[in-house]
Length: 242
Image 1: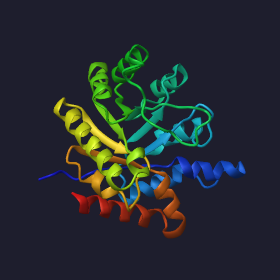
Image 2: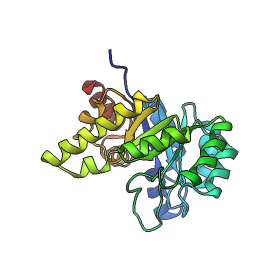
Image 3: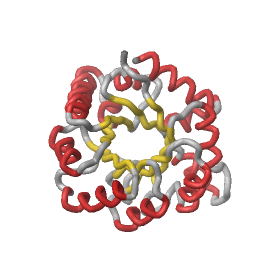
């Protein structure tokens, strides 16, 4: 029997709303606690170089108060490595980052940045943090993750979400093939980016995928139905696909 999917809830955009006014509300740490109560298996937070949403204080408070695992999304920089090593989150997902982008677009080039990533992955693993690489569904990137010793990859589903018809079907096959290849090589497979109630089922149905990380859509839906109901409906859609 296919095992149930874990759901990681990204709370970055609660912080985006807070920062729009420069105050303390809404508090992403409170959102994380509510998500945990609603059944989230983990909390994801991306501490960006420009601190456009999540802040250093948010990470410190999440580290101190969360009762479920924290997945710190981070760029491959010395600054972010030092922060991760200080807080030692359950997981650290290394992602590409550009100042001009609105959100993380595309996967990190693990193959092209192998020499840069190698000591970072080693340092995080030595600190007891589970390392994940946010990558495109590509055999070359999976091979790089394997050689780097990363125990987890998160497959970028953004292109799948943007396409439709035959092109979406082609991208779904590419994701499924990448998931199968990674799992065959002993790498745990996660997926995320752009997932909604309407497009999550085919990704959730890929048997090798064990975790989905979803944020912007869930926070947006929470404006209308509340965070608990937003998460519950996504959980139901994921479970139905299995």
